Picture 1 (tube, rainbow, N blue to C red):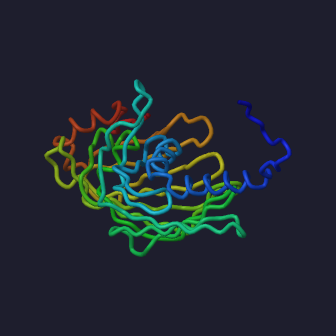
Picture 2: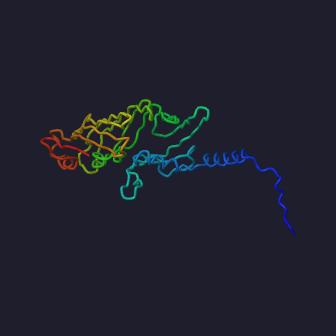
Picture 3: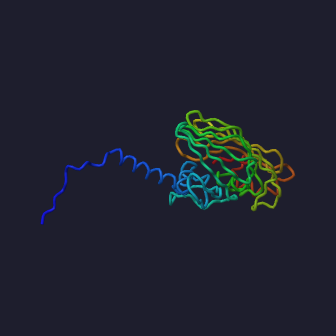
Length: 262
């Protein structure tokens, strides 16, 4: 018995395999799990912002917003120091325009947030949000020492990141308190941040309260060295005795003030 192969038959065209592979790739991308998006945000923010317990796909899904910091031992993100309610996102992409539009709905936003993602740039529409002040712990000292409690509100104009990074964010922390101090409230504070090509610069000022904080810092976008801050802390005259313990934790005494350098 012999088996003859017909070598004269036509082979399947390469175009067919290209179409098949394209369809398989499209299906895979359309069903890519939300964990991929979460891992990307973890890396890009250096664990400062994380998506907690994401479900759905990278195109349509939901997650809680968390605020954390990197674990230097394991290289992963630590457990979030604060979590918000769950947010949802919906993504629509256009091949012709070469960009995707992401709409985010979140109870703490004043309106749905729109993010446009292009090949080399990300744009975020102006908005306002209210979050727990405990998220500040993820941004290092002095907040990680204070362990702030209360509400934080943030407002921003249109933001963009890419070849021309620019934008400004203003945060207000009103009637802040801390579990390590019996003085309540410690004060109210304003943080102004500006986005630039080299990174984000910010300044802290006190608007009211017995604990007076001020200083400037930056978050580098190039070397990944984290947050750097230089400032001072001191107490109003009638609160010096009750705040001396807290002040000694915040910085090194220099005359009437305590120097903060992180």
